[in-house]
Image (cartoon, rainbow, N blue to C red; front, side, top):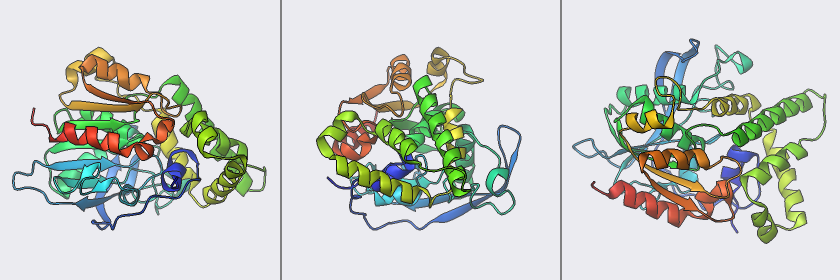
Length: 347
């Protein structure tokens, strides 16, 4: 089985299988200058920049644009390298003009690791709402888009897709959330907290105060996949090598970037003012929604997504495979087929 390494590290500190072959990137990285960007906390990101790449052709009516935000720790380049953007892919560039956007805190857009004025822990904490607000401003300023055909997101990208439906009702005609959630469930919060504690441990390791991140890496890796996956696909020696590799790669990343994104996911909840319940959300959302979840997802609980979909009578696809949170990699044909049918329909 080919490696999930490129997606596993951003999502759950996991490195073990060989990454799929990368298609040639169609879009070059651009940086949108948003100036001083005020967050919902009242703090300001100084000299705020948002990374993005564009693919495909915008039609004369400017009605075929799709926004594709990144997952936890991922970049717009990862979306291409892992095969999610391109002709007949999840974001089909033969039909749509695709804008892949880098979320705050991924090391490309404004992040603790790349800010000159607010480096490291001086960087203000942001929310998923802040990510979406910045994306909306970028779309208006650079591609000059006043509407979207759709927003598509995986994991933390799916959280952003949900937030788009309420932050800017009707701006996107459709939204697809894949293993995302409208709010962090208690089980999610426990795992995100574990991730934050792991980062604190690793920071201590770098300062020479502690030893061995293997336990934290193993816990998060187990949550990303399922026990059945491990039984069928990995030997004991495979797991040992995988965790050793995860530890080596982990130490090359900005842990503060990861911590800030984890905090954003911990606080994620679309049911905050002006909408405070699923019923109110159902009345306020004017975007057609496709919700794709994995029944065996132990990293992002599928129930909040399914509950909202039920309130909206939205379309759902419930995957039953053993890959859990990594279903987007393990079951791409099902996900791509359902998404294409949803996006291409004219209802």
